[in-house]
Image (cartoon, rainbow, N blue to C red):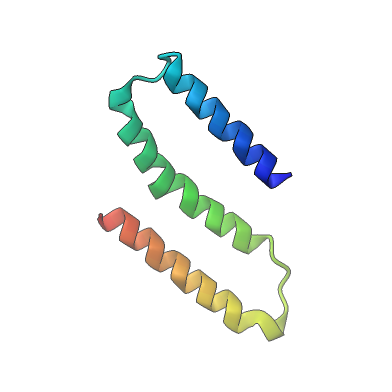
Length: 77
């Protein structure tokens, strides 16, 4: 189901650009918005949906620290 949704989103983006609704000069800005805002939000959302178990706290902390590192790296680039 998620792969299908991703395909629909990609098709939607392709059609928006090909129909001229979004100009080529705006593609870079949209890409930066996705990478610097939407993907970090998606990571945080995915982590927050996990059920908390004490045995998995090490894994959750590792993922959280990697997420913060990625967010900071993207904002500094």
